Image 1: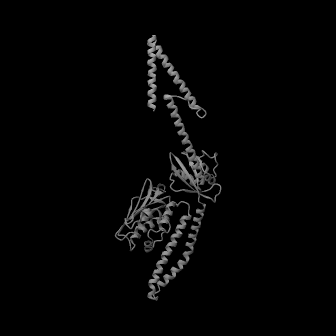
Image 2: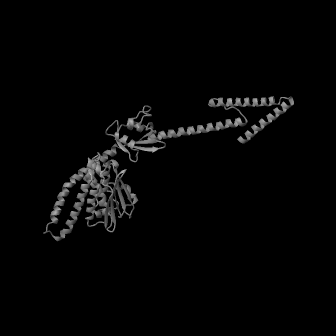
Image 3: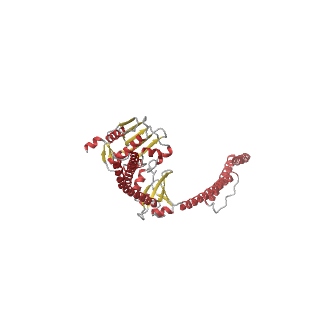
Length: 436
């Protein structure tokens, strides 16, 4: 349609020019006649352009000009664009209203942060949980309003995989979980959730486990003592030998579980980072390898590769627990014809320990939960080997106190590799340790 309008306008202009040229030729004023017609055509288009500009400025109160031809097509096109814009504007307003109703219904607080961590928007629950004020706090940086050191470190770290728990500003008994989600060009979404109930339940559980473990230790010690005394009695009826040996084995197993529970409770109760004693990792791993080789049931080969003589700054007891648990698990679940490889090395990113085995492996669906307390991949297999289900949970908590991470690679039936990665600030060169 636009092409036909332009063709008609061009044909009309050519026709008018030919008529003007003919009139000018007859009257002897050819140039004047053509110039006059072109000037009139220019004035006409200028007037229509002026009318169009006035209508665009006062579009809401004035009717569109009644033009024909190309100018009519321009007016029609503007009207279509305007109607489309009005439709999208109404749609955006509708979506925004739905979004506000949705965020009001969400029990969690939601805060939208800009590239500079400035507050761009928040819902009612965020205002209630974080004591934010509408209009006053818009544009403020979030760390200026939530002045919690843990939250500031969480912001600066840039790793938002896990939320950080802080105390509320208005009530120190209220605990809030803050979880950042990055999206768009530097935008962030802050999810605020009240986790006071969960924190209190977790504290009650920890207290119960710690108290129960300590209360069980004394009667278990007494029971184990009497069982040992009876088992060592040469005058005992031989028919009681097997039951007493089984009782001794079960008492030892329960004692190991209680000891692990007490150790886990101690790690959970200690919120501070581990100390910074200089630990000779190579020497510790050599001792642990000798202990593994001394076991009657072990893999054919247990190798140790120490690629760095650097020391590790941390708690010697907890580091021993970490390495011992991982090596013991590898030896325990690897068949006699298999092998276990232990490795310690350091690089620019920090210190690294790994233990690989050719044992039974772990199915992929179990990997996210293997560090949970009492979680067993195969309960029957763990009972046969005397496992308590607490070793990896102890490893996880001890690593957290050393600012370290645990990485697990495993495949069912093809062995596993457990790797511990310590930050560079906990690695100390032996030469530097000697100078100190």
